[in-house]
Length: 189
Image 1 (spheres, rainbow, N blue to C red):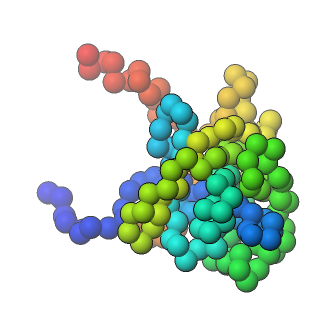
Image 2: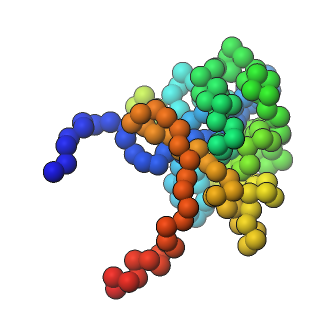
Image 3: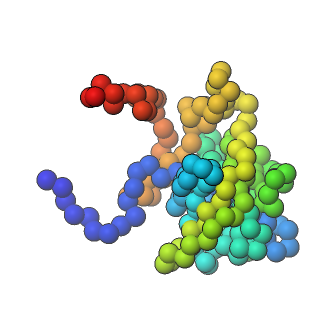
């Protein structure tokens, strides 16, 4: 029998996303956002939900652009810091010793040290409640060579993305592939 836990933000897995923006003075900023993910296939889109109180909120509204980096295991400390500190009070790139890279497609930066980045143009803004969902059209996905497989595609086991445990507020990694999607279920047909 299932036990009721109430209405909570419990969903697994939850990605750890690095949202990149420029503030009104052009200072690059990164924030850790766990409320996000792919939300449309055509056009390819990603959604991130931020509170109005965040420093990145106004930057996305003003610049109509953002980047989404994928946090990885070997940058867990930096990723966590980016969720603790505010860009109002600190140059987070400098403190975390990350290298800002100006996107050549959108008016937003990303960190060179995170192996994958999605460059997004703001498509829609949806007021939900405490959070506002920003839907960005993915104009390009860039990945470091060392996280691509022999087929040229991104390899999740090489990326080693961080996953946020919404229940216990911890970080986890991913395990090996268990089966091929849109294939293993065919045995029930």
